[in-house]
Amino acid sequence: MALYSEKVMDHFRNPRNVGVIEDADGVGEVGNAKCGDIMKMYLKIKDGVVTDAKFETFGCGSAIASSSMATELIIGKPLSEVRELTNKAVAEALDGLPAYKMHCSVLAEEAIKNALDDYYSKHPEAKA
Amino acid sequence: MKIYADNAATTKLGRAALEAMLPVMEEEYGNPSSLYELGQRAKEILEKARAEIAAVINADPREIIITSGGSEADNQALLSAADRGRKTGRMHIVSTAFEHHAVLHTLAKLEREGFEVTLLPVHEDGLVRPAELSAAIRDDTCLVSVMYANNEIGTIQPIAEIGDICAARGVTFHTDAVQAVGHLPIDVRAQNICMLSASAHKFHGPKGVGFLYVKKGTPLINLIEGGAQESGRRAGTENVAAAVGMAASLKDSAAHMAENAERMRCIRDRLIKGLAAIPHSALNGDAEKRLPGNVNFCFEGIEGESLLLLLDDRGICASSGSACTSGSLDPSHVLLAIGRVHDVAHGSLRLTIGEDATEAEADYIVKNVTEVVEYLRSFSPIWRDLEAGKKPYIL
Image 1: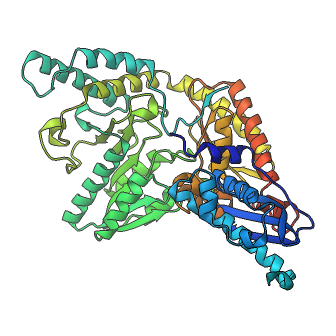
Image 2: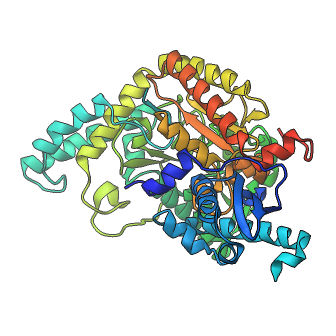
Image 3: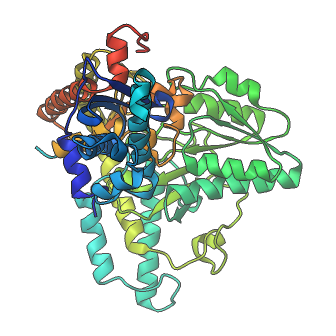
C-alpha cells in the first residue's frame, strides 16, 4: 500500500499550472513556514470566469498535489462555482488523502478563497 | 540505480545472521526451559549467543538481558533506575533534549509520576558538554541517561567522560546505544556504563530483538512478569533464533568495524562535501564526532517529505525530520534541539549509508538531491521571497 493514491502521486510528480501570473487579478497566500506548508495562488479573472490559475507551494507531496488539483478544478469555472469549492471536493478529485493530510486540501480551498477575496477587494462591483 | 540510504531506520539482514539463524529455526526448536536434551541444547545455544554479545562490549554474559529491542531495553533501564530512586528518595533524572522517544516519553511518564527531569542542551554541534552534565547532577539524582550516538544527526557523545563523572558521583549511568552498537567500539567497563540499550536490526541482525546490558549489582525491575527466563528479569519463552542472529551479526560487525568505519567515513565525507555545495544548505551536527554512516542536511526553502518522495522515484531511500514525515505539526525535536528554526527544520534530509556504499552511489545521491532541491525551490513561495530579498536567508 502506497502512502498516496495514484492520482496524488501523478499531480505531485507532474504538477499542473505551476508558476506565477505576473498580472494576476487575485493573489492568495495561506499557511506558514513554521508548520511546513505555504500555498500561493494566482488567479486571472475575466467576465466573472477564472481564465487562468497558477500556484507556488512549499510543502509536502499532498500539499503540492492539492494545489495542482485545485487549479484544475477552477480554471474555466464561473466565480459563483469557484466560491463554492470545498476542500472535500479537492480531496475527492485526488481519490482521497490520508486523514492526517486533509489539512493540505483545506489549505488549497483557503488559498483560492483568499485569492478571490483579493480580487473582490480590488473589484467590489464583481461581488454583486 | 537503487540505493538504500536509511540504515539508521533499519538494516538489511546480514548473511552472518541469516546463516546462524536458519539451523536454529529448522532444528533447534526446543524450549530452553525444558529439561530434555532438545531443550537443553536450545539453552546452550542461547547462552553461547549471550556470551558472544557480552564479549563484544566487554561485559559478563550474566549482565546481558535479551529484550524485544531498543525501546524495551530503554524502558526497563529507566523504569528500574526510577524505581530505585523512588525507594531511596532520589527523584531527579538528568538526560538530554535530543534522546530517542523511547527515552523521552518514558521520562515524561516519570515526570507525571513526580520525578523531576533535567534535559541538558546539546548545542549547535549536537554534543553534550560534560561540565554542564556534572553541574546538573544533584544529591537526589538517581539516573543519568545520555544516548551514545544520536539517531538523526549521528553525533557521538563523550560517553567515557560522562561515565567517569557519574561513577565519581555515584549515579547510575544509562546510555541508549542503539545507533552505536556494532558501529563503534564500546567497552562498558572502561567507559563506566551501568546500563546500555541495543537493537539487533541496526547492525544487520533480525528485527524484534535487542539487549540491555546491566552492570552487576544494578537493581532491575521487570516489565514482563511470568516465568524465570533471563534470570528472572524478563519473562517469556526466549526467541533463541533471534538471539543467535543478533549475536552473529554483532560478532561480524565487530570483526570488520575498523575497516568498515574507515570506508564509510570516506563516502560520508564525499556526500557531505557534495551536498554542502547546494546553496543555502547546512550540515546538521558536528562534522567529525559523528557516526561513520550519517549525513544530515537542512535545505532552505523546501519541505522534506516532497524531497523524499522525489528521491524515492529516483531509487533513493532516505528520511527526513520534517513534520509531514513525523505525522505531527512539529519538525524533528532533534533539529530543534540543535537550534534549527522550524522553517529550515522542515527541509531536512537524513542519509545513513551502509557498509557496502560506493563512491558512485554517493555521486548519484549528490546529483539527484541537488536536482530535486533545485526543482522544489523553483516553485516554492518561500524560496521566491528569499531570492527576491523580501526575507533574509537563514542558512
